[in-house]
Length: 84
View 1 (cartoon, helix red, strand yellow):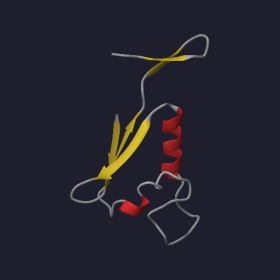
View 2 (cartoon, rainbow, N blue to C red):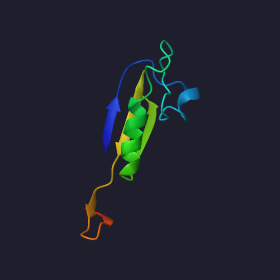
View 3 (tube, one colour):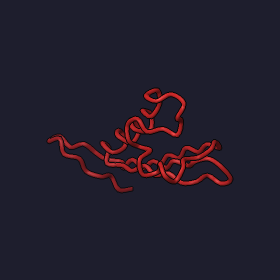
View 4 (cartoon, one colour):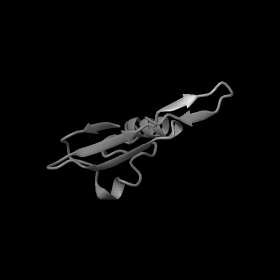
């Protein structure tokens, strides 16, 4: 589990479902200049079979939680979870 928190303005409720899509940003000053970072992270985490969530970071900001499962790649290319 990896958690990243900030104390900025947070992610508005209306953007939470879309914030991991390419081009979506909380910044509206320069269209096309923002909205790639969270998209890339969510893509990488998804490819690994993991999850990424966000929630409010009291008193302000956002808390992102990433979970990437520990796995073992077999000789035949299949992947098995490692349970410890």
